[in-house]
Amino acid sequence: MATEKGSGITAYSVKTKTKNVPMINPVIDVKSGRYIATGTDSEGNKMAAIMGKAAAEEHIKNGNAKKGSGW
Image (cartoon, rainbow, N blue to C red; front, side):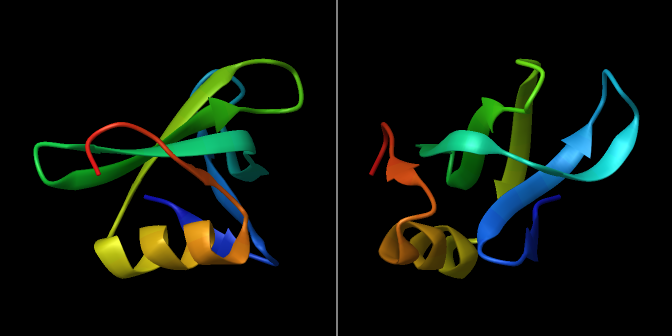
């Protein structure tokens, strides 16, 4: 589950087992009606976070993420 910390998208890193890790260069895709932000952490590990439509549109509007496929 994605959370909003400051102005960027943060998520749980499975590899390092840490919460609220900032996502670098997130891209939000729509797959099966779900909004999924994908990106990397500062160490280059891949991350993903699922969010609602309102949160996804807000991040794109603020310039925190880019639109991906499925829009």
